[in-house]
Length: 81
Image (cartoon, rainbow, N blue to C red; front, side, top):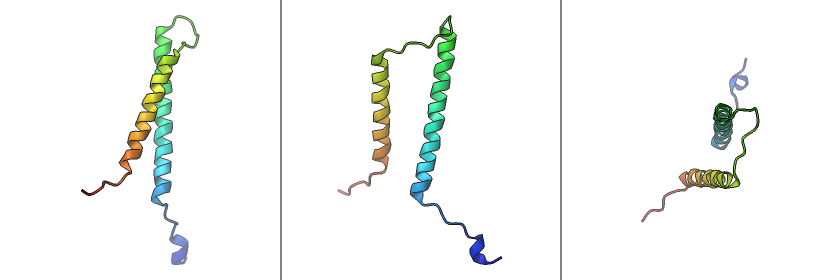
């Protein structure tokens, strides 16, 4: 075999970041849904889906937006004074 056949194209840092973000997002989403289902199952007598008030959903959405903003701030360069 030649040396060219053994070389794999190197993934860029952006691709690695996207893949890691997608994996972590999916894992956190799955765990959130799992824990929600466990708590709902323990706290309900029948097999109905629990009703989540809109105010709770709004609070969760604002928290998620805040988390995304904080993560995006990590990528900014610091300005020298």
